[in-house]
Amino acid sequence: MIETSSLTDITDQVDSNGQNGSWVVDHFSAEGAQLIIDFWPESLLFDNTPDLIRQVGNYMWEDSQKYKFGVTTYWTPNLPHTFATNRGYSINKYIPVVTDVRGSTTSSYILDDGDEGVGFIEDYQQTLTELNQIYLSVLTQWSENLGVQWSAQVVYNVPLDMLASIPYVNAPECEMLGFEHNIDGYRQFSGSANLADKRIISSEAGALTYRAYQQTIPELLWDLKRSIVGSINQYIIHGYPYSGNYGNISWPGVHHISICLLGDGVPKVDVAFYSKSTSYEPVTTQYWPSDLVVTGYTYEYLSPDNFALPEAFVSDRIFAPNRQGFRAMVVRANDSLTVAGVNKLVGYAHDGLPIIFSGGLPSNLSGHNASFSTSAIGLLNAVTSLENVHTVSYENLATTLSSLNISPRTAISTNGTWYTYWREDNETLTDYVFVYNDATGVPMGQGMTTGNISFETTATPFFYDAWTGDVTSIYSYQQSATHTRVTLD
Image (cartoon, one colour):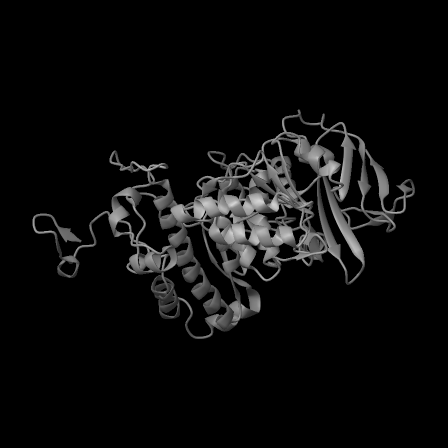
């Protein structure tokens, strides 16, 4: 606390907590995480409580980081040092620019350079991202030492790189409310989680704004199915506990069914979108055209920060062959470049990965690095001469992929809107494909559609009834040397 007239720090002289002030631990330091860790044994984890948690529980958990309300500027004591170390210059001169970047007050400052200071704000947010990762890592290690895991709703309420931070927890969790039931948003969340080999990608499910006691079961199922095709595989229903004897509140076997269909093997995805952002408030759709969905292509998003993960490599023209098995990477003209990201892209291009520059080469840089601007464009220009690198128009991406002989694992032809979600289990030599008919906006009872899907496999097809658990043979299908075509209605 600063005394106004003298600008003297008088925090240690004040007994009051600021009356109506709202206090939160520092989410940008190991010390903040340690404060939580020290609190739990004193207040909750005493006697045999840790043993009981290990017997019946699996996760320590943190809700979405909502400390943004009433906050004008995010700060932590170690920020200036970390900023100077990681960004290569001092933040001190630019503090007015990063102050109140959320627009909570009427005061704001811009610079007279080309981007009006946006690059400095991105450097500030990137540094906060890296500091928050320290906080998450400490809590993850603490949870593992307790014999459980750390689950958290990772940074989509604050100006940080969500995709970069997701790998730092055991079980990342999103939510249907904050993601507004958006399949594209779920795919943004799940891309780095799948690349980081997270077995569980969770969701706080069933929440609706101003709809308490009004959501119907069909609405909830609609939301859950949209999550599934976004690669979410665990659902924590947002509700309220009641005492009393309530019957028929569980679905026998549903947990085992969900683990079987959504947890066995690894997810397989056709296309990776390069995506660098230092703020996900809110999580909005990044790819609006419907051409990829209509033709059956699946896709997820990756931050260039994720390229440092162990599975982020190219083999036989495939990116992350042990994980999603991406067949192409799409970089859009309005994407933001990073030094490490460009160097990785160049390496992937030379390793044979098909890279598509959609709408032209990007020229935006994430952060302030004037000396890198020219060299980045030069590096990308140099790889455009490779036979596996293509610069195309933004429109008709699916047509472009097809013309390059990059096919979807599930080629769809239907009079509706179908999504697929594919998991490959090499241990049992089984592929699981969830097919979802999205009748959003269609009146209840009128969403029936028909069509066919060509699956990239020659294995024997079966129907799996998720309601009963029954497995039945499919008797009518066509097979080629590489594909199996099934009609669905």
